[in-house]
Length: 516
Ligand SMILES: *[C@@H]1O[C@H](CO)[C@@H](O)[C@H](O)[C@H]1NC(C)=O
Ligand SMILES: *[C@@H]1O[C@H](CO)[C@@H](O)[C@H](O)[C@H]1NC(C)=O
Ligand SMILES: *[C@@H]1O[C@H](CO)[C@@H](O)[C@H](O)[C@H]1NC(C)=O
Ligand SMILES: [Ca+2]
Image (cartoon, rainbow, N blue to C red; front, side):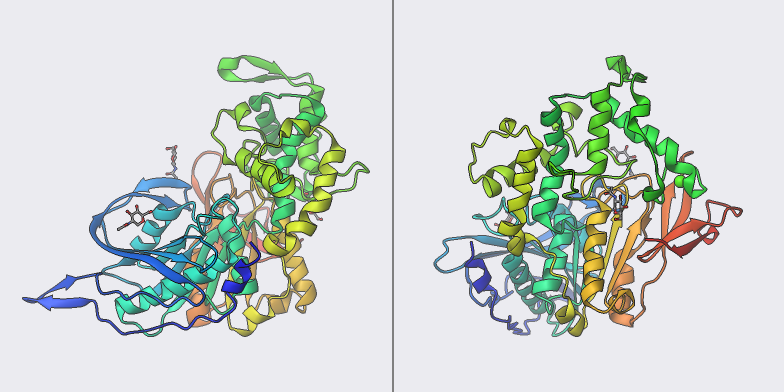
């Protein structure tokens, strides 16, 4: 695995061969993808390159603003598949590039992955980017490591291949390049800023899975707590803690809208629910037990060592429990079970057959924590705080993280941001190239009761291309009556505050105040 590092050592030299793709026959352009030349990828060989013209591609495209997959309008696109290998490694890396045949917006976009995969959203994301006019590329990060997300060299190769193919198809010698990723894809965006600072002009890296070795264990904590307490709660009861804590703390920010805007102000005691009955629909009424409350409190507090020392972030009140507890409780298919199991079995225990049911004590969990970062942090921690090479290359990075993120706590991003500020001269200087937003009530990449920043990619492009610095962002959400209302999302470390008197549905009724 370590040899991965070497492949990326040389700086990519893009081979622009200036091939025009549209030949004219009888007045109408005949588009052909056939003559796109093979790109030159330092340190790699191309095993196979296919080029397909699809005149009416339709597919389900992932829309991050809603979190839904919707059927796309027809798209005319060249789809280019490049399979690379690295001599001696016996691997195969696929890079897919989608090139809209009309309406190219002059930009290249690298599309990040999710979960364990370098390119989870794959074709749906490429389709969405191409529909929006981008030449877009994504990668599976190799057949050998597809399950492990150790993708740093592949990220650079995605950039090299994607840019070269884009340049030759459109005959363009210069264009802007952007990264677009959330979650694992957000982590990849930060990895690029840290290790390949010249590859992209702008990086959008939301809800990033930074400090992966610790974060992956924090994701396993709720599952571990059930083994420690030897308890199998009802998911309906667990969600009652989410609902009741939201009810208790919603209005602390002055607006009853289902969003806890400043979770640190929320004092909710889960033991208050013990003995109460929760209406669980078809399952009838369930009584909340002391162990249920203990599970909720331990997830809120986050992993703690045997001495009670905090090992990592917890999850704020109001956060959904579905991803934090085993899928068998929710009945919702959940890749987080697999992700946390793979992390512990393959990476920490190095035994694919390791039986997780043997992990039953806080001491065992503390031991896993003690070794995980030391062993894997350098490879996949993605938390090097020195971004000076990215800054000096003129790069711009934007990132938002929701406080109701049900997988990666916002504190995970806040910690990294503070570390960057610590080594790079403070928040003011960091804001010159890295803008960070905490979005109250927003869920993981999509969803959640709170507002998401609007037109985030457009804001990044305006920053890169017009030098328009992003500041306070507009956001939209549904209030408790289901009505579309406006909010603002403030640059870190500030937080939106309602003025207390004006119309709470209007953005103008909020102001950013220093908070974190
Ligand atoms: C997303 O899909 C779900 C389930 O199909 C639906 O209930 C919801 O209204 C959709 N949301 C949006 C914003 O389209
Ligand atoms: C390109 O890759 C995709 C995904 O693996 C595959 O569905 C498609 O058939 C490939 N195209 C060609 C021409 O091999
Ligand atoms: C997040 O960090 C803040 C500041 O350190 C802390 O007060 C808060 O309890 C943390 N939240 C969680 C859920 O860990
Ligand atoms: Ca509120």
